[in-house]
Length: 218
Image (tube, rainbow, N blue to C red; front, side):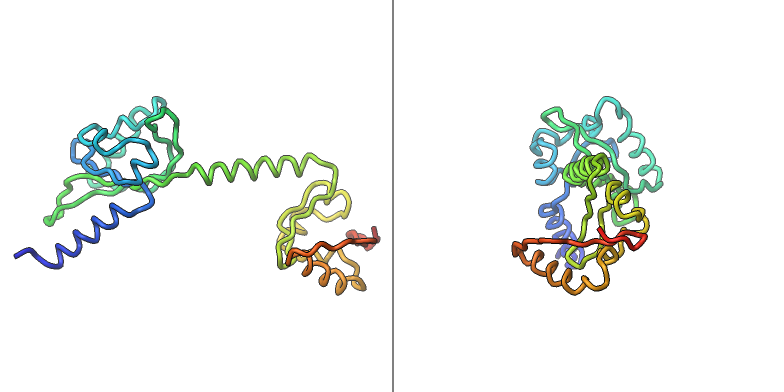
């Protein structure tokens, strides 16, 4: 009769392997692929039958030719390889930025029988970072004052133009309330206006009045 706790553990692992959104690649002690989940197929483009039995090193791009093998040696020797960011070669020839978390697979006696690696696709986050860098470049190259403010009225963006106009540095304004720029006698009016804007209402502003670092109104 099968060991029930062991069987339950195996079923949980199979469920994780099958349903995980990240790619999971299992290798034996020779570095040959013995496990390739559906997310690995989706992310890297290879069907399981195309990769099973192949050495995992084929996923290395040319400029990282020996990267996987080097880390496998460390794992086989009992060492630890922490999560790291790198690139993997997809079936279509493109390079995919990934975060890799490798680990050893042990048998019931604690002996290493292979390795498992979880690969997380970083392409979306890298694209978002690139977009933010482009936006920051545009904001900082204009002479206009551009201020980013969240729904709570906290400043999260402050262009060089804003610094020139109001006299506050980014360090002084970021994370602080935008009402610092509003004269005390206009703050209630501003807060009411701001609430309307953030519920999607269109508000026409006739005479916005701001106050710079010296107290001068603009």
